[in-house]
Image (cartoon, rainbow, N blue to C red; front, side, top):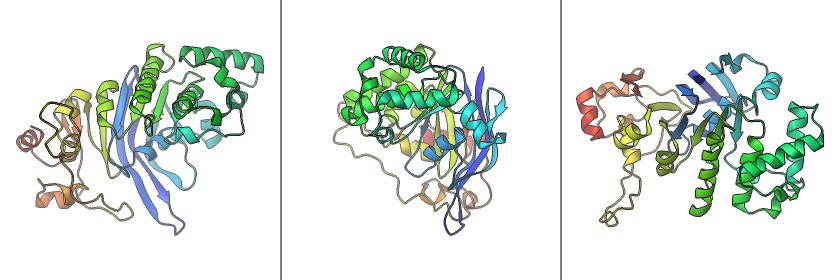
Length: 330
């Protein structure tokens, strides 16, 4: 069952000088029930902007331009801000912010965050009912109920992260958008958070998840499918196995070869790097956005619009013919 369908989504930032910077430019993908979609790409490629766009959080300077975000058959871009806030956010789709550990007001107890959320969405529930619900949810996610009485500054970084995840999923959203939920955590705490996110799916607390990260090895362990983004566009989409081990787009190839491999004999080898820098999205870009950095670039790559190619169920945005793509991805 298709829970989310995003078609040709375009969102932009408006600067104080009235400039328009298109940060998400024509992104399309589908998310099925029970799937985890991983989104990868370097800093500034539009991952976090896409996350904010998916939950309909269009507030200056982020603005909606065009395209659709269809959740359970309803296009949320056609709803007004108040309707999205009350009927969509938290219930149909929830969000774990990138700076989750700094998302909690240090002057409020954890239980008060949950009281405020439920008061907005379920005003008929008493505080006792909400507290009981929160206690059960924290228990489901292996969090001690004493955390509900704590202030954020009394919690460690890992505890704050797990608490934010519990709060974000308190209303059992269909879709959870996790924006780099393991960043700034040590390896052991990352493992705990990853297990927690997997348990959300296993216990049917959330039906599907979008997992955004810089750490590509994490995607192999948690994601069913991966979308690689570059300069505001989706440049490759496929299963985790295909994208990680047999990438088709030259940028995806370079991205995957930059991963540290903990294998015998790999220590002395130099890591691959991508020369140059991403384009400035303030200006109109003609041709392939990766062309200035691509070692396989051809003259035809530098002009016109580069449309998406389909290879069975995979998608990639590149003009290279099938033979060249196979050689690049080998």
